[in-house]
Length: 455
Image 1 (cartoon, rainbow, N blue to C red):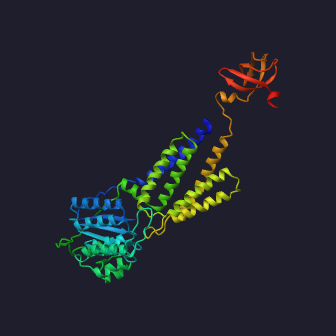
Image 2: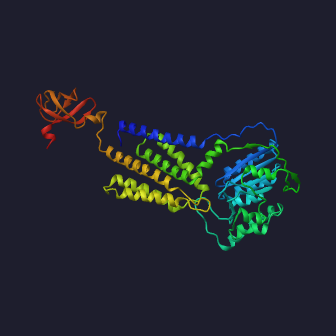
Image 3: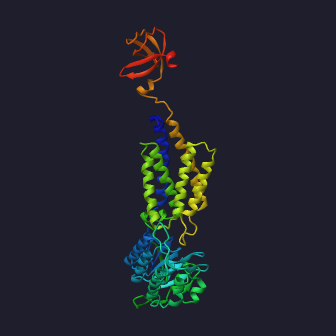
């Protein structure tokens, strides 16, 4: 067990480190998102941004934005989209709200280089207006069955069942929108993707616009048919743009389900719990580590986690601990670093997150983690050899000198650490004899001569 003084030092350093990590995470994630204020001089165009993996958090954000647009009597809701896809349930929720929105909705894949893939493709086609910027693409909407931690293989019957359900859902609104359902279905059945030019020529989208201003200019005065069959003429002269941002809570949850953040949460959580177990009573690392682990588990429910990546990260932690215990000349340390880097690379792999954990983040997090783990374990092992610096245990083995002669089984006085103590001995000890403390009994010491102690 580590001594109290060392425990306070390690606890202070560890606590400061983990509190800093927690504050960094909160300040980076809880960036306040508020709706831009505007003096509404003309029709209001309400802008929402659908960026990243489509998950319950973004579905909730779109739902709230559509409701706010209706409350403010907006002329148009513009959803700017750049997504690799996401969860089917979240996609369905967004589409239902778009179809039921009392305000016309334009879905726009932008800027250049953006994509509306997988679930994003169906959301694009569900809008009253579907638009894409030059240099964008959409499609590749074949469903993939996942349960959060693992991708699950599908047999032929199950695959047909899921694909047929998805194509039927797609037809249910593309036909009423006047788009090409046969071509749209190939995005599901053949995983086909389309450039903006191909989508326009195939009657999947309505407009190709270079930017937002050009899109709204082209839409001004256009007559569109709503999902209910009602025709509406868009009047966007001198429009006012109002943006609806993610709330602080939504930004925090969206940040958590990023591969890089998941990897960092796993490392901080593991290091925090490891510090608490090796240095009981420090508290702060254990609290922060526990919170990070729970947040990591939440993200792992939404992301397709490769179990091999988790095992490689766990193996790396074991190798770091063994490096502190064994003399491997750095072999175990290097092996642990390689194992953790491979674990980071394997941790997330799916069509939704093709990049997974970035190598830069993996390397920048692995090296400090390895150093801290080895350092903490070596400190624990070294502390087991340290002599207690306080209490009666401190006196055991201490040397002193007899100031008042001791008779066998009698009492005398000795000076230890500059203090006078009553003492007993099994043999006669004259004044001036050098002695060593064998035992402490209350306020009395049991001593023996140094000559006998050294035998």
